[in-house]
Image (spheres, each protein chain N blue to C red):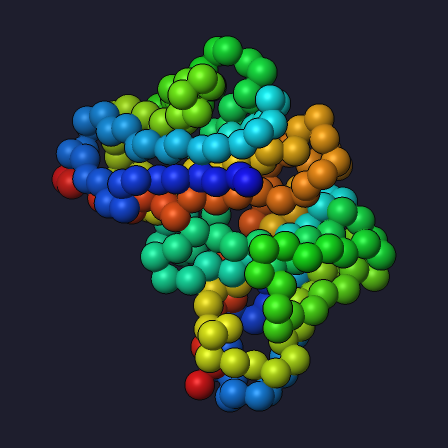
Length: 113
Length: 118
């Protein structure tokens, strides 16, 4: 049972570089989410999607972009990496109705130097 | 505005004892869901328990139970017979959108770090 798979698990970027964090789920979930977790803090929602072709901003979207071309994939892109984006990133998904619990990936630890 | 507050940054419990983690929240919705998630050192987020606001009965999952006080907007987690594997960060979360289409996001508290003492 793969569930939600995130790649890579760790990455170090230089300021100004770009990269894409990959997220794939095999549970046929409609809803997918990207969160960031800063040290000692809870999760902050970056972007979410309620289905293929539909995305929307969360609480902290600046500096990020997403796309949802398929039900399974929800990549998160950083165009110009900044030190403030150093964080742990979590992808999550949930089935159908919004109130279902979210299933999380293992996280990506990203450092911007 | 929706908020979730966990006022205990750290808690500790003796193995086999009982511990209660506190969570308060605020929402203008009358119907919503509340969750407790566990995040061990592996960083994976694991659902522990959930409560539907329209249900008066407190949710229970084996050694985990909640004390849901809707009027007080309180949602505490009780862990009975604590085990070493319960050591983790615990997050309280609110899903305020049941019955409405205005929002599609969860709100998380800042977490409580639980240490289990052998």
